[in-house]
Image (tube, rainbow, N blue to C red; front, side, top):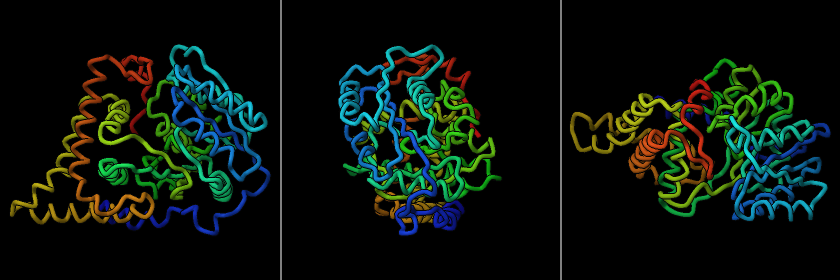
Length: 372
C-alpha cells in the first residue's frame, strides 16, 4: 500500500509529451544523431528506419549499425541508406573486438562517428510516431536534461503478453521510482530504457560513453546510473504511442528474451537472485492464497488492492487494462521461473549466449557495475 500510494502521488508529476504544450520545436537549431544497432533484425529494421526517416524534425541524422548479421539486415540497411543518403548512414561490423559486447561496441562505434548536439540510442525493432523526436528533444532542451527517457508503449498481441508485462510494469514501479529520477539527491532512482535513451553529446562524453560499459548486458540501466551518479540532469516522460515496440510473442517469447537479462540484473549473484525469488513469492504470489485463510485475509486483501491500484495508475500510459491485475500472481510465477532459468543456464554455460556470441561469466562479473 505504501508503494502504491507513493506511485499515486508521484506519477502525475511525470510530464506527458502528448499534451498540447509539448507540441513544439526545440529552441535553437539543435542537431541529433539517432543510433540504431542491429544484429539479425531483418524482420523489423526496415520499419524502424522508415519511421525515423519520416520524422518531422529536420536537423536529424541516422546511423544504422549492422553488427555481424547473418540474415538480410545489412542489405536492408544499405538499400535504405542508398535511397536516403543525406539522412541515413550505414556502418558494418564484421568482427567483434575482445572485451566488448556486440551491442555496446556497435553503439560506441556509431557515437564516435557523430558530432551532433544530441545522441539518441534506440533498438532495431522500435517504431516512432512522426513527431516523437521533435517533442522529446524540445522537452529535453526546455528542462536542461542531459538524459531523457521517453517510456515506450509496448504493443500487446496476446493476453499472456499483457498478463506478464502488466506484472513487469507494476514490479518496475516498486524497483525504480520514475517520479524520483529528476531528483538529484535520490541516487538510486535512475532509469534507462534501450528503446529511447536521449543524451546530450557532452553528457555522453562526460561519463566515458559506452567505452565505460563495454561488457554491461543491461547497458541502458547502467548508462542511467552513470548519468545520475555523475550529477547530471536526468528526466523521464510519458507519451503513449510516440515510441512503440512489440517485445516478444507470448509466454515463451518473453521468457526467452528475459532469460539473457535477469541474472545480470542481480549482478550474477546467486544469493541476490534467490532472495529476489523469495521476495517475489511472498509479496506477489502468496497473497492470492492468503485470501483463503483467516489470519492472512486482511494483509492479502490490502496487498491485492494495492496491486489493482497500481495497474489502474499505469493503464492510461501502458494500455494494459486494470483487469489484468487478476493475472499478477501468474506473471510473478513466470518471472520467478525466468530468473531461476536465467541463473541456472548462465551458471551451466559459464556465461551468457547472446545473439550468437558467447560472453564468459568471469568477464561479465568482473565488469558488472554496482547494483546501486
